[in-house]
Length: 143
Image 1 (cartoon, helix red, strand yellow):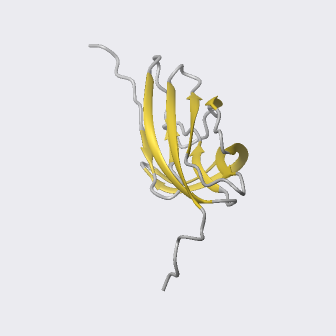
Image 2: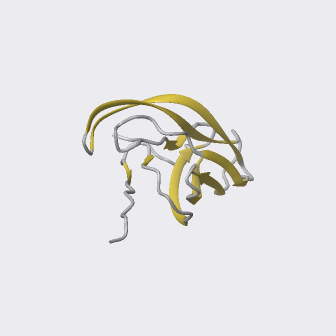
């Protein structure tokens, strides 16, 4: 009987949290994401971490900006992610990388960029971001 390898990943709605248990083979996947942001404001586009099956932190993935945005900048910061009730893990505190996008202050053009996320086991994920930038002037009053 062939040995089965465990692999788990999920996306949380707020912040697109990516957690993965190491897989033993190379695989590349792609993901398209839509992001809305006001001109001159910063928006979080992803949180990247790695959790092993025993609820300990795995090695952080490598993140590469494969296609740079034309009308803004992408910045990655280190952070600590506190996760509760994830699979069999009741509470975990993991190191993470957090990616942010900030459009230029005077930009009203839509933008796009790509991040390549490489995990230690050889798995890669290409994330394509399509950014809609609003100027705020034509937003109207919110009640």
